[in-house]
Image 1 (cartoon, one colour):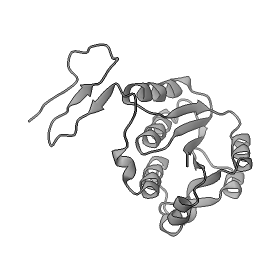
Image 2: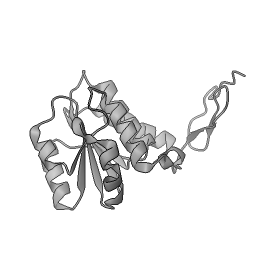
Image 3: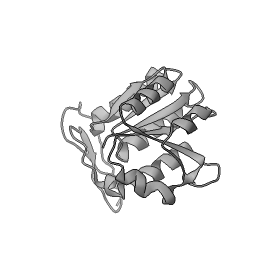
Image 4: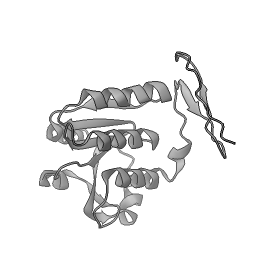
Length: 189
């Protein structure tokens, strides 16, 4: 199964931080890539590519001007669509069926008001809670529930840097290919 996150309705100048965080969460928590739609923002696309280049992958970053054609084509190819929305069914009621479907997934997270066609195209409209919440939070919880925590130990290939877990302090090791920097680690013990 491959899992791509589709970020709907990005608005330049307004959504930069949230869209970047959607991409970072998707990558860190096991998605295979992120597709940004809405207004094209090369700075965000390049920033997410740079994170993957530095911290490892694989993780695909792309832009799709016509998100509706993208979703329709995904359906034609047999992919399943999960739409994260406060108005969907509770995640605990549907996560087992999503996990067991064994087909490629497109996980849709919105920015501005999500058009009704997305609700109709979705195989699952999934609510993390039936309260207003952040698309970043809902994506993180969804991915963690889907992968049952296994995504937290994912190995990222071709990383140039890796964080070494510590009780206190910060330790980052250089694996390959980066220009030397003065100090990558801070030991605050």
